[in-house]
Length: 214
Ligand SMILES: N[C@@H](CCC(=O)N[C@@H](CS)C(=O)NCC(=O)O)C(=O)O
Image (cartoon, rainbow, N blue to C red; front, side, top):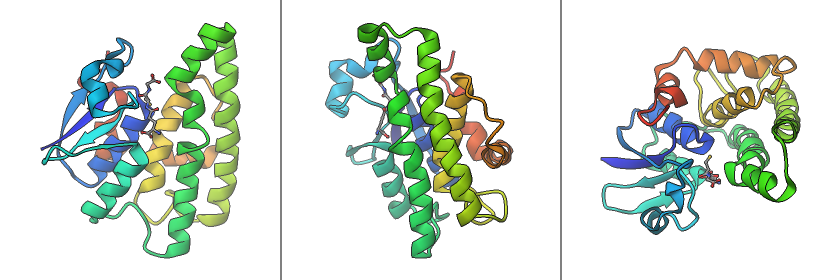
């Protein structure tokens, strides 16, 4: 069985768990305690020299890293059900919206950046909330507009099922709530979040439902 190296509150591990659940894949969850610094251990660095979760160990021992690469691998190795639309332009729009979160938002709010700001710039909790809120709000404002122009109908970003975009969005909304970002201006995103939380694949991936959650 595939092994997923994960941390319950990691947004990137969360998005990978959702993708695996949407595809109905079984995996053995291997918790890596970020707060205890286990991602910097010799054992874990041998699996991922970047010292970041997630990492996915395949049945033959191959280790994949970087959640976008892992999810693209899963999409190719297990095409059904697809996470991406088949039409090329629709696919590009979905990938772009996922990248708003994956490339331009999550990295700015990651644990190591926040720890660095606290250590070297003496950032307070208020500073951190302002920082994270700034980038989350910028992304969510753009996503509301992108969804309105690319997917004006229905609940999800494409069709009547969640896919790649929702894998990225739901962990980012979880993080936005954690950092006290006001979600009032983003009604479509909140509607998508609500609809996803009625689905088993998302509930099973929720941080609080992980074996290493505290
Ligand atoms: N681009 C990477 C980012 C992975 C990443 O930043 N993981 C975080 C958890 S969400 C982590 O391991 N952080 C450890 C740290 O910041 O020290 C991916 O998508 O897999």
